[in-house]
Image 1 (cartoon, rainbow over the protein chains, first blue to last red):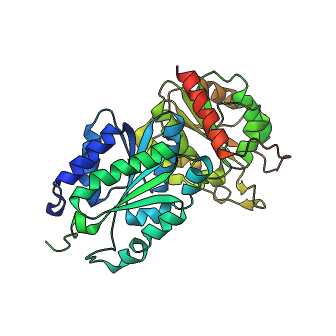
Image 2: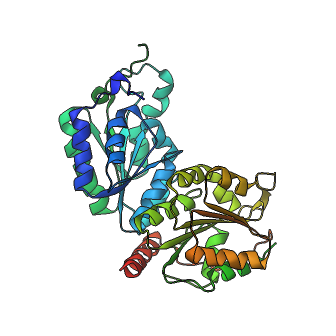
Length: 178
Length: 191
C-alpha cells in the first residue's frame, strides 16, 4: 500500500530514529499515526528493534515497564489522543520509578481540520505534567533530535517519564481532500 | 473449581529457576506471596489491565527466561486488547493464566463479564495464542504447571476458582523495591 503523499519522509524523522538507536532502544510500542509512519517503518526494518503494534496506548506503558524489568529500553509512539488513554497506567511509572520515553505526535493544536481532536490535543501538555512527566515541545525540525536526546537522558538517567510533543507545525496539516 | 491459594501453590510448587511471575493486582498478588515470597515475583498493587503487557515486555527482553502472568478475570478484561497484541507477537516464553472466579473480588464480589458469558479461552484462541487450556481438574492444573516451565507459547489458561476472599497476606508495597529486586533477579538468572 502506498503511503499518503502528506506523510513523505522528512529528515527530522530519520534523525529521531538515529537518536533512538544511539540510546539502545530495543522495544518500540505504537498505535499507528501518520506523523510517526516513517519512524515506525524504520523500526520495523531494524532487526535489533522489536516493533509492537498496540491496541491502545496504555499497553505500551506496561510493556515498557516489563522491558525495563528485563534490562531493555523501550519507547512508546502515539498520537496526542493516546495520552489520555495512558493516564492511569502512568501510575505504574511513578509508583515504581520506571523510565518511560514517549514520543507524541500532536493533533488539535495547529491548523487542525477536525475539531474533535481539539479537546484532548489541547490538554496533552498539562495532563502529562500532572502525571509527573517531563514535557518538551519540538516545533521546528532542528528541535526534534535534541529534544528527544534530552528526553532519553531524563527518562533513563532519572528513572521517570519524559515526553516529546511533536507539533503539527512540524508534521504538517493532514490532507483531508485529495 | 479450585481454591485460589492451593491453585497458585500447585502452579509454583516445582518452579524452575528461570520462571518469573507477574501476578495481577489484588488477590493474585496476595496468592503469589502466600505461595512463598520470591525475588522473581513482580507484585502488582495497581496498573489494572497492564499485567499481561508487563509480562510481554519482560518476555521479549529475555527470551531465555519463562514468564507467567497470573491474573484475575477482572484485571484481564480491562486489558483484553493485550491478548490481541500478544497474539501478534507470539513470544514462545510467555504464559497468561487467568484465575477466573467470575467476580471482582477486591471490590465487593460484583459479577464480572465472564460470569455473564464471556469466554476468555475463546478470546485467546481468536487472538492466535499457540495453546489454550481450560483447566478442568487437578491433572490439568499440574499439566499447566509443567507448561509454564517448558511449553511452547504463547500459552493462555483459564483456571476456574472459587469466588471467595481468603485472609490477606501482603508482600512488599514499595514499587521501587519490588522493581529493583526483580531486575537484580533477571540479571542473576540471565547471566
